[in-house]
Image 1 (tube, rainbow, N blue to C red):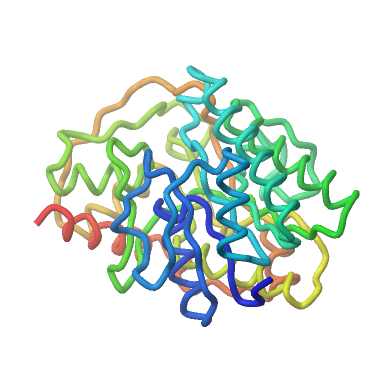
Image 2: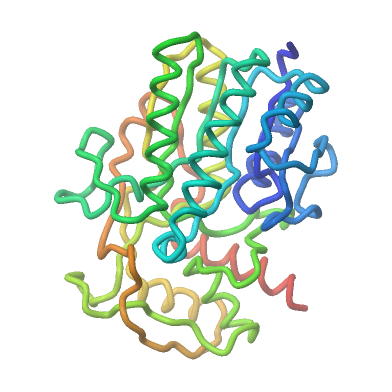
Length: 328
C-alpha cells in the first residue's frame, strides 16, 4: 500500500480536476478514474495517472487498486443536476448511490481505509434556520440530495463496522476557476448559475434565466453560498491531511457562510465583464429552494481551513476569465 497514492474518482470533471491539481502540489501521487461521460480528458493533470472506467464496476475498480495501490479515495464521480434528478430519479440513485456502494466495496476489499466524499448542502432541503449547521435534521427535497445522503449513511455504517475513516464535505454552490487557468467549468449545457451567466456574457448562449423571482428573499431571487473551487480543493487536501494524522471521521459544511442572490451575481458579472448580457425570468425549478448558506465553524476548527478566495468578485472574475479563454 503506497503511503502517498490517492485515487480521485471523477477527476476529469470540474471539481475533481481542481482537487487533483491541489493534491499533486502536495507531492502526492494521484490516480484519476473517470468514465468521461461528462468529464474531459484534457482536464486531467498531466502528472496524474489516468484510467477510464465506471466507478460502479467493482471488478475494474479492484483491478485498478491492485495495479495502483492507494491508501485513500476521494470520490467526486456522480450526477449533480437537481432538476434533472427530479425528472429522472433512477439515474441519480444509480450513478450516485449504487455506484458509490460498489466503489466502497472495491475500496474496502483492496485496503483503502481513508475516504473523502463529495456530498452536498442539498441534504438539508429547506432549512428552518440560517446559517445551517451540520447538526440540523436532514430533509432533502430532491433525489439528488437523497442520493448523496444515502452515501453518507453508507459511509457512517461501514466506518462503524470497520477501520475505515471518512470525511463527507457538504458543498454549497461551487463556482470559479483555477486562478492559474489550468482548469475550470467545462461541462456542455452547464446549469451552474455563474457558469451560465459567463457564457451569456461571452455570447456562447443568448441569455441566462432567473428561475423564480418570487422567493422570500431581499430581491425575490434565490440566495446561495458561493464557494471558489480552489478553496474547495484546499478543503479536500486539509481533510486528507486530517485523516493521515489519524483524525476521526466527520461531516462538514464547505461554504463561506455568505449568501448572495442571483441578481447580485449578475450585477457582479456585469461589473467584471463590462457586458450587459440578456437576462430572462422563468418559473421556479423543481427541487430548488429559496435561500441557504453555511455555518462553517466545524470545518475551520477541525481542519484549520482558511479560505483564500471568499469574495464574490474574485469568484466571478476567475469564472469569466476561464470562459473568455475558452471562447477566444
